[in-house]
Length: 605
Image: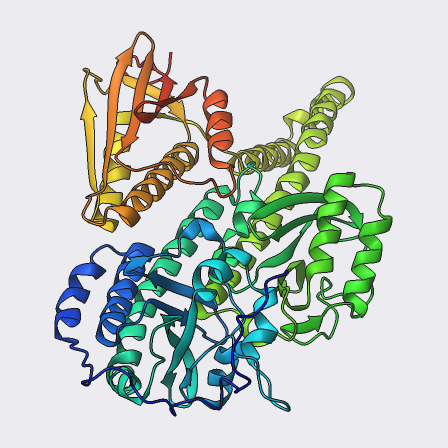
């Protein structure tokens, strides 16, 4: 990056801490009373929307109180997501979710000084050329920053103050306030009221924000686990890319690789890799993947848990060489994996082991060196990780039981039929013996029961009255999301005899996707228009031999994350014999489900 620091004196910005004299008369004050009246109302939004709005109110209060131009709240928990929660510039929110600037490195720059000392930092000019023998920590950091962030947030400012928020002696959050170049630098006069406010209320406010973020994290984990739960003990394939979404959204890892072991426990394993780098995610199939003797993928190794590593160590070099020389994957996938590995500077591996079963592993990684403290899982991600292991173990058990029972069932009935035919032909008298017939009946009953057990491990379509099911489904959503208005409008007579053949799992997958999309669209609009109330309308009509359902909301378009939702919906609708269409003006989704009219007994004809 070619940007040069602004010309300045040779004084170190650190030497100028608290030594300037205020050029403005009077003493600023910060009145928190109105803020604490508004916080409970803002919290009703729930989720990230509430976090954004509360953070904005806090920054706006502080910036107004000391005449700052730019404010930032940085959340820096060890073992959790390190991120910029909010940036306000000229009184308006600047940081958006699609900017991909949230993750930061709290160990460098002036923030690193605050983290190390636990003391506030106030500078005259962050761009100042340091005196001989001294250094400006910002000048060493800014070339690695995002150019958009530097241009909009750092380039126009000079004076800055960073205030730590602590639990005991541990700094878990900082508030950063800046003034534009040309204005008087911050002094003790401005620092005093900000420091007093932070000491009195900072931890309380951030704990409140963290509580909202934690509830959001539980909801994300709950949604992901719900999806997994619908797939366990069924013949449906686990969506591994979706399973790692929680690691991506709830950790400080900006890249990572998840290994999921598939196939038989004995012999070479078929491995499914899900790698992510920023917003890009790829799923790669590795057949006959043989882990090294000391690999963390093997449950029998004595590797500490979790395992910390860094770039170009023995494990990373060995894995990179394997990917580079492996001929069983496509070139595009190979390049993506190599790019992920080459960008890793530090990582933590979490083995997915349970009950002596090596199910795989998850690598949470960063392009920042020695970032281990911030790659450890927070409590909610640890809970998700523990439950994911249980689901993977159940999925493996269900698959193996299904394979074993099928192997026994088909030849078992074949042999049983041959045995009965041979007895009838060569020893007809034996069939008159009660002991023989009871043994044969017992064997037949055992094989029949085994056949029924195999059937348990499959999706079972049922005859479902869609209006009733939708009311129950969205009734739960209304209870969990009271801030949304959800309306179900039935515009045709759909009696209880009009039924659709589907499984609950298929319907839940479709409408969970649609509901999540509507929520994101509504949040996108509320980011710009906070007073808008989210509204989702589900309309049902009858069209010949189909039930037509339209889902529409009052949100705005948003950037796709994985792009997997609509293809998944289309695939399920195709399996059900229906179809889905998308309309843009206004945006809505139209789904057509085939139905049949049941006979008086309620059975499918």
